[in-house]
Image 1: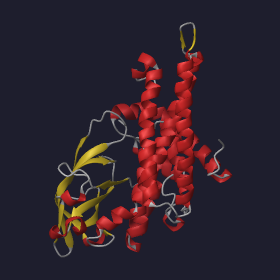
Image 2: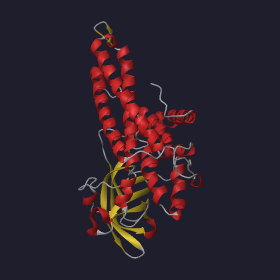
Image 3: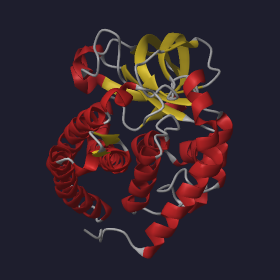
Image 4: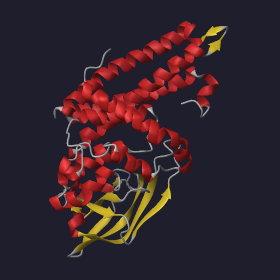
Length: 349
């Protein structure tokens, strides 16, 4: 079915993204996967190409558009390219709204230009070794010392953790407040007492640096409080719809791409004297996956359009995230089976 969610301007942007991937990402990606981290040069190239800060106002160096469809195009193309290591979606769509929506004018002028040109890479640190993402169980604490906060604690599984120049840290500022005693504090690279642990060795997404972070008596200036004191819970909940939709867009794009390359494979691969695609069971498998992808795409495109118009609610964003990622897993497994033994070989996507 022809997609109707995008205009000619969005499709022109898609060509820009594809050209960027071909020139600045794909030639280097195997090395990044081996190294466990991407090059900072790629971030600066993305900034130069206008791929960072799409929703940031132009006065701070951003794209000045609140149209989420541009972000969706970016996520789709990076997903199809298998380039999750260069986490532009995390930077733009998850962390960006905290800075544009909560930062003071002084903070915006201090951080957003670098956010948009690629010289400031960002991360958000919520998950902890003992608490996971349970806000009630967060132990990282920030004590009010008058002219600064004294931050102590640790975080883990932090995407962009090694590269990040600016980390939004969820910390307990009112111990008796539970989840409503948390605040967002911005810790900048080079701050004394802020240390990074190992780059975690994961089973996939190798090029995406994921780290442990440690805070030992880190003096965080009062000017680095982001949003309201003890307001982190509300701030975190506000942006969940877009965060979930971002993941859903990646899920359906991945499923569609896996189906596409598997369809080509079964047309070329021969068994029992003819191409696999001539076997009825194989055709049923492809047809079933194609149907699921088409139905999911229709729902996701509606969610993208609704969010671009400011109308997507948390319920439908949650539905989209759950359904699209479950579909991605099913399609990945079925496509691997259709590749036979070759599905387990790393040279096959």
